[in-house]
Amino acid sequence: MKRFKFIFHAVYILIFLVILYFSIDILLNTEQYLSKIKLSSYIKFPKYVMMIFLFVSILMAVEYVMQQIRIHKLKNDIGDLESEVTELKAKLYDKSQEENALVEEISFDDVDKGDEDADEEDED
Image (cartoon, rainbow, N blue to C red; front, side, top):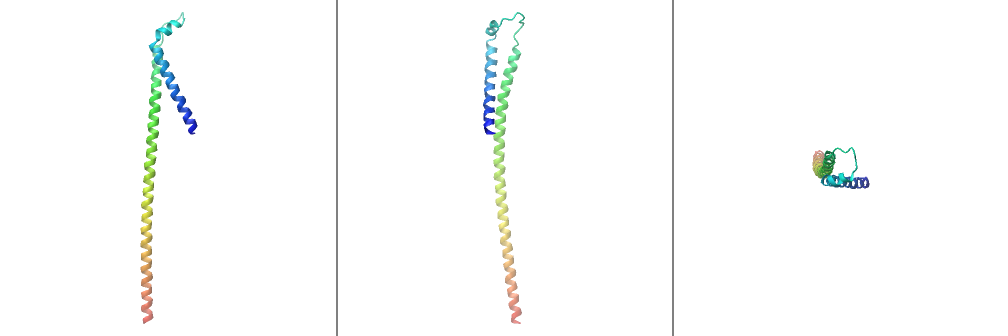
């Protein structure tokens, strides 16, 4: 999966750069490209198409950056939640240890009282 993601991101960035380069190049050098094109029915070069390509390439870049920021944020959130879970487990462990200590103390007190009652019965 990581290999696919790496390849996909590389292709994505490459496509963005190619679209951006050619869109800007065609917009800046429109007259030179038009002189090379021999069309008898040529009316007007559609600059809005190049603007759309330029806009889409910028949107691709923004989307990619936002996606990476979101992934980074989610990874940080996961780390925070894991530390919180670890902290809660530690508190739960401490609480269970305290309860075990109380239960043992109570059981020792009952055994001691039982021994004292048995001693008193033996004396009578």
